[in-house]
Length: 346
Image (cartoon, rainbow, N blue to C red; front, top):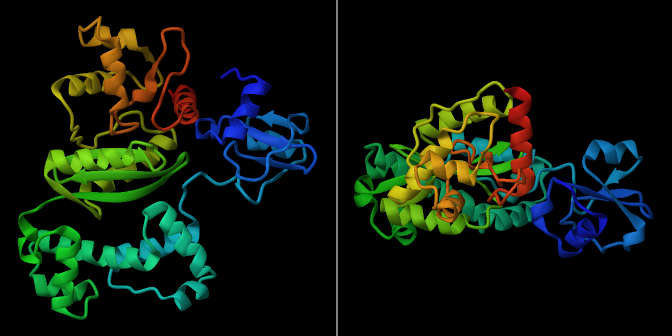
């Protein structure tokens, strides 16, 4: 991507997240380097330069900013919090108190802020929600309501019933008949992603900073007449394995079953995307030819933008007719990274 110094400076003034990962700002007066979205006070244009990797910043003698932390992936789950979440996955009945967090070297207020930012709820609310979701999953699998409640850490059956109905809108006894979409956070080299799957297949894989994410959740829930709950299933387990192999450069195709929720035309477009080989690209015009709709370029671009399953339905492999990188829900910098990685490993 060819960018002028003026355009990059404008991006840091506007804190434009589209340039995350594309370049870093090095500040000559302070000796630090920042990501484009850094919230620290902006230096004058004559006091900055721009580099295109953290390695280059280090080679020039700059150190990472303590405000925006450019060495960390945006939205990535910190390792210590990830360990706590893994323990909750293994045993949803666990109840972490502030003292438990402090004993692990975690500052409770910092943990609270992280959960509010990334889950729109406090850590303690997240734990309660996770216990409810765990019980729901057990009920779905045929476990009696009483056993599901107590195994998930609830002390009172009536309290469990009230909480369950308040969250889901129906009683635990009716939970077995309700369609469920499992939701899990996954860590990748490009940042944290959300994965959603039903018993029929993967229906969403998106980066957590995707602007349309809440809309996509609503579409899935309404279209499938399902409740989205924190949880895992066999399709998500297979996805984690194959996604890890993909990012390691050793997997070029996926076997995870997909449930693509959309119109007939959108599904036709998404099937054509899956036919674009690993490490190659197609223009929108070529994609239109693939589905025998040569005049539907704009509609195809819109359908690509509505794709809810990143990477596996590879809309990152579609580029402009002039070879330029066009819009991508995960950010142009991720599109460039994915294309570079695939070309290097094909």
